Image (cartoon, rainbow, N blue to C red; front, side):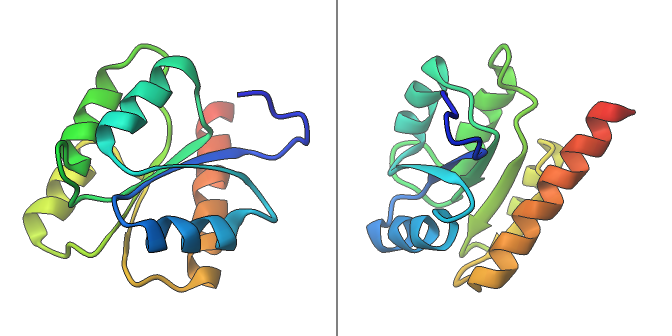
Length: 133
């Protein structure tokens, strides 16, 4: 992704248009935001581009977020992209499965804009620390 304005790029994946709009409105001042409405579209996007972070819903048609994340983790040069699950699903199995796949955070919807921004900043800080070790 060309980052001519220097902003980090975030890929938001959710099958609900209003959630994607809210994410985009929350993040657009600080980040370049790409939105897609399915795991299938996210994987197609990732074949061509490499965002700096992915916000990923769990419950989606066609391919759910955990299935999508499993495929991302198998992609060459994409497997290490930080992922935050942003979802209405709070069941223990989803949390544990997501953690096993190396997510950096798990945020429940509905989300607070300030909290989302804070957690994204923290994810980028952790990624920077990991790279400098």
